[in-house]
Every structure is written in C-alpha cells, then in structure tokens.
Length: 277
Figure 1 (tube, rainbow, N blue to C red):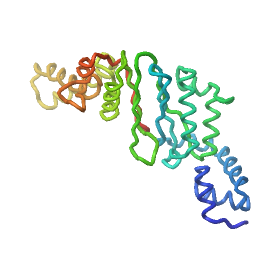
Figure 2 (cartoon, helix red, strand yellow; figure 1 turned 45 degrees about the vertical axis):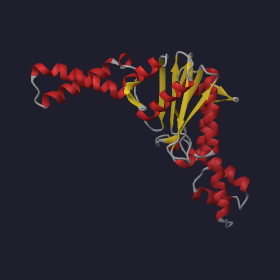
Figure 3 (cartoon, helix red, strand yellow; figure 1 turned 135 degrees about the horizontal axis):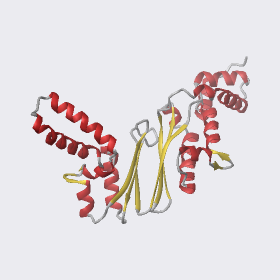
Figure 4 (cartoon, rainbow, N blue to C red; figure 1 turned 90 degrees about the vertical axis):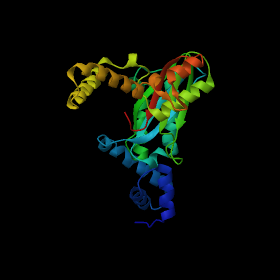
C-alpha cells in the first residue's frame, strides 16, 4: 500500500470535506492518484448515505435570494459540522436551492425535494452532496415572501462561518432604512409571531394555564388571579410578538409605534437561526 504525505491528505480533505482518516485511506488505496482518491471517497459516501439518516444535522447555514424588492426566499440548509458548513460545495448548493425556490415557488419542503433543478430532483442533489461531503445534508425549512417591500438581514455568529441567522421583513410600502432597522431588531430579539392576533389560540391557552398555575402557587387572592394572568399574558406578547416588542434602538417605542411613525406597516417577517426551532 502506497504511503501518502499529510499535505495531500489535507488537500483532499479541503476538496471533499471527508474525514482525515477517510482521505488517508483513499489516497493509500489509489496509490497516490488524487482523482481516483476523490472517486473512492464519493463511492464510500454514496454507500454511507443510508447510515447517516438517523444522525443529527444541527449545523449549516441560512441563505437568501431576492428577485427585486417584492419577492424573496430564506432557506435553512443543515449539515452535521461547522467544517462542512464552510465548504464551498455546500454553500453553492444552498445558493442554487434558494434561487430555485424563488423561481418555482414550491408550496412546502416535500414539493421542493421532488422539483427538478439542473436536470435532477432537489432530493437527488442533496443525496449527492451527502455522499460527497460525508455528512447528512438536509433542507430543514424555507420561507417565501411576495408583495410589498421586502428586506433581508443576514448575521454571522462566527466570521469564519456562513450566516447562521437570517431575517426577511415585509413592509407595505418601500422604506429601506426602516425595513433594515426592523430586520436587525428581529435578528437580535427573536420574536416568534408578528402580533398578538397571529398567536395560535392553543399557544395562548397553554401560556394562560401556566400563568394561572404560577399565580395560584404564589398565593395570590382568587379574585385577583384573572387580572394578574391577563397582565402576564400581555407581558408575554411584549416578549414574543414583533409589533409589541420594545424597539432595540429606542425602548420607549414599540416596533408597531416605530413603523407607524415612519408611515409603514409590517406585513410579515421570517427569522431563522440554524438549528433552532
């Protein structure tokens, strides 16, 4: 079996994102033939795809694509390690898929996976990346906003890695500066819903039940409990609904007031953080 040098192992790892030992073994098996070693790793990756199904893909990136000011998509593409998240092939795949989302406007992830991109289904492209990169690669979610004026904000939690937080904000009328401020606020404050009216009834029922239990355990008078619970639910709205949150640049104003003073209305938003619900 041919001996290999670490420089070649490192170069093969950087090209394929495969593990160091896998790269070393592939170069030994190919007797130092670099192209053949790449093929060996691809074949091994294809055989291992099924074994990776149960593994957790909690790293990755968030990618964005705009088509003018009134159409944009946000995509979370996951992998298992930061190393693959930095890989050029992984990032190019994300860029291709998010552009495809804007072009085809799929209804959901299953529809996206079955759609064709560059002559193959998106599912087949993911399987190929899975095989080549040696890790589970999957689409976790995507969002598509259309109409009005849409701005995005992408944030890197590590300068060496691609964006891990992505935000889309949709206004009813163009105002780039206000949209950017609200998008940055959204990235920092992580609201879950746009407004109290958009919070699902079952979510509020659960929170109200918890607040009621908490209030009783604190020994508050029975007659005062409903009012206390209402106050705590309103406090929850201020924490988790965008329009009720205090604006990070001026905490004397809510986002709703900030938008109103600017003469715009926030129609929708999406915020993704890699690996987070």
